[in-house]
Length: 242
Ligand code: GLP
Image 1 (tube, rainbow, N blue to C red):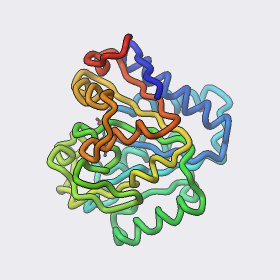
Image 2 (image 1 turned 120 degrees about the vertical axis):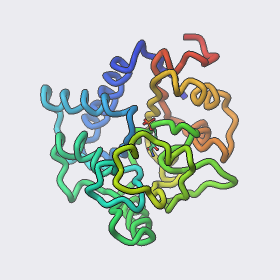
Image 3 (image 1 turned 45 degrees about the vertical axis):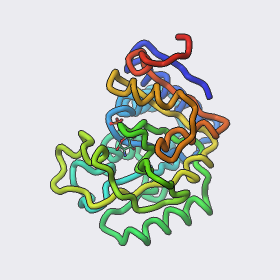
Image 4 (image 1 turned 90 degrees about the vertical axis):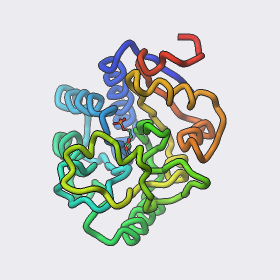
């Protein structure tokens, strides 16, 4: 596992965008799994700028939504759908046939099966861009006695329900819809983005390299190709030399 510590959120985001762009160049029909939340927003903006300024071929790029708030209407401004439409799907002009996304209005169990079938047939994920949850979750793989390997309906923790994304929600989510740990660990490459002083305790806990279902992100230590991109504030409690 490689830790890269950047000076600030801007340089972390530029680096992340560069890594995503390089992956697209290497494999234009790659399957990009994208997290939402505050952390990757600037990286996506820088990626969109790169795509506009350079000859980044996006004609075959496939995009997979990591997770979603169950129970919110698809047009609710708090959905991961609204976020991805605004930050990636729209600006990168990803057409519906190359965008794989949880539909909150469909039957949730059927949605899990549909996403699972897609990954079985067209996976694995080439590059997963992930964020670190306040409770060390990945997607909505919430800490607990056990974790789920495949796409599943998650019972959301109070920590997840306190996520700032939900401040604009028209209603409270009833569950989470998320890829499972095996889906993520089968990714060819994983980028974990961690930014801000408020994530320093979580990143320090992650760095301890103890694997536990109570710390879903810790399973990334089993993966051969993970890059952790953190900024100095998030890395302020790390023990690794900076
Ligand atoms: C949310 C999402 C995750 C996201 C994480 C971190 O709950 N389910 O996909 O990566 O929490 O969010 P943020 O980047 O806003 O801290």
